[in-house]
Image (tube, rainbow, N blue to C red):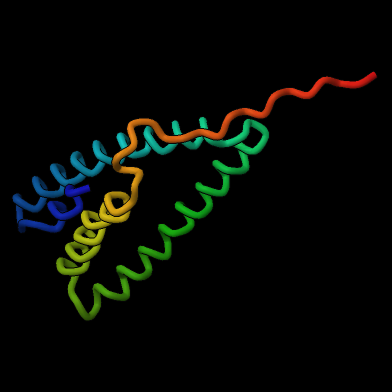
Length: 123
């Protein structure tokens, strides 16, 4: 996630390099986080609800993208086109504090509810 802080740095040719390096770092860290969260979501969700859980997560997370773009555009006017991405990058880098302040950081395996035992059909 630290790649977001690299993207707005530099000017001229250095800006292209900062953009490329920042996007590579951001993409690499996003893939690891995405695989981890999707795997746990698939394990923790009941099979009959999995499609709804995934659809809800996509709706909420992808639905926030236009709102973030709108907010960044509004802030870029008074703060500048270089300061605004630096602020959003810093907020992204600080976001893991949420995870680090919970007991989940000490867990090796995430808990799963035991599957209910199948009931016998009565004839």
